[in-house]
Image (cartoon, rainbow, N blue to C red):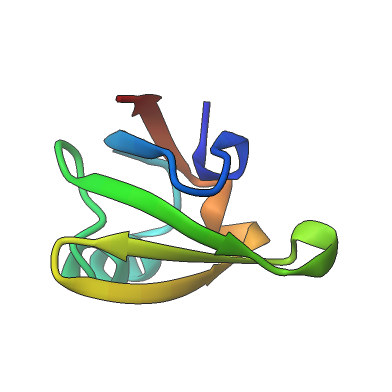
Amino acid sequence: MNITDLKCGERGIVTGVECEAPLKERLSALNIRSGGVVRLLKVSYFKKTFFLQSGGSRLALRREVAVCVSIKKV
């Protein structure tokens, strides 16, 4: 299961990030790392962009990046 499987308002615990090292480091800087909690705030039309809250930050991820983040629903 990944971020794209969440519905608006649902939360999940990050279980892993499967992507190249530079992108993985960038996501880690945005508090998206194993054990972190994310909440899906909104999804754009055609599910191309996912708006999240992670820690105290709000961010947007493209679908190509969001599918790389494995989660477990809370």
